[in-house]
Image 1 (tube, one colour):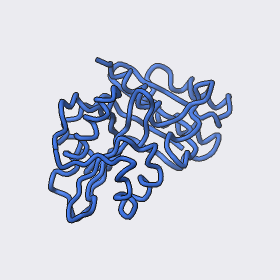
Image 2: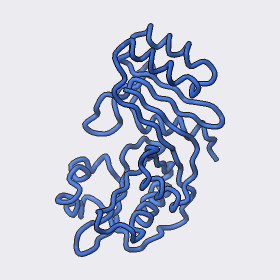
Image 3: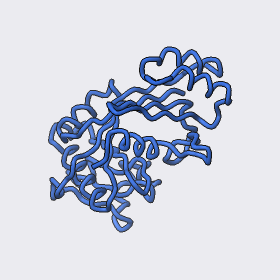
Length: 225
């Protein structure tokens, strides 16, 4: 069983690609936009910190000095140091979860999307369709002959996948999100990888889904751009 800090390390590597010096380079999904300048993943067992390759060494050294042994206690100072480079324009804070072991798919009506039937995504989830090779495994629930709920891998490595879940607003409240996400997690785990999920603190719908799925929160992550 992986520790919280090990899970956070997997989470960080799933979210962002890193260069040879272990600096963040780009977001780990098409169109591979620049990674945030600063990442902090806080767990009960410690923290994972990463810096963008674009940050000057003097800024990184100041950040490391500010962070010290308790990174989460000095976020205001982190923002001040980053602002020496340029103002912080984006701040993300939210919980990071792991799926418990899913013994079997919770919903037999969740359909696995493959190359043979991926056309079903095109009118309703065009981004997933266009980047399908990076989004597998992918499951949908079909209602009224359209895919109304989807769960796929938003980002992944050889070790872990991060879930992306969406349900059409007119079909919410029917447990479709729980069922399709459970099907996805079971498949990820079957393939020998870790099934992860994260969201922001102001996304109450996603937090509610995490509770219904009985996900285990192992930490909190913070991104600054």
